[in-house]
Image 1: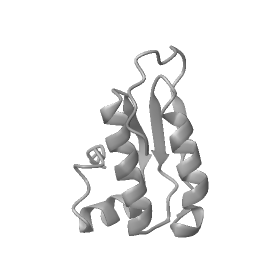
Image 2: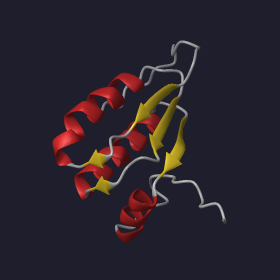
Image 3: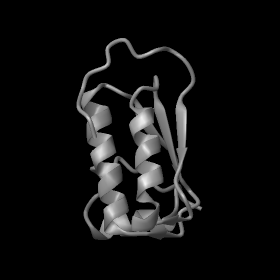
Image 4: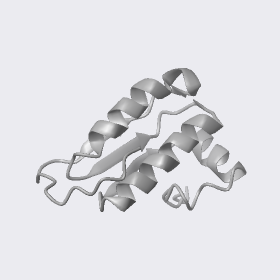
Length: 106
């Protein structure tokens, strides 16, 4: 992910990145392309609510994106996070680094 600052980011709607149901190595190229484009958006919302399968490589991609977005001052938030993603991030100790939202009590 690039680390160029973009002080002239255009105002407008947030870019929504919907993560695939099977978010593993085979899907990373498409997601990475979307995340790279999103670095030019005014803000980004990541929707991981539908993720049913995830691997370490996918979480590393999201971590790299979060770091690049932060370095550029790009607001990035979560629309949703599946239990599968939450569990995987927790096992790898990435919950805070990915800035996953707190779970809501039932």
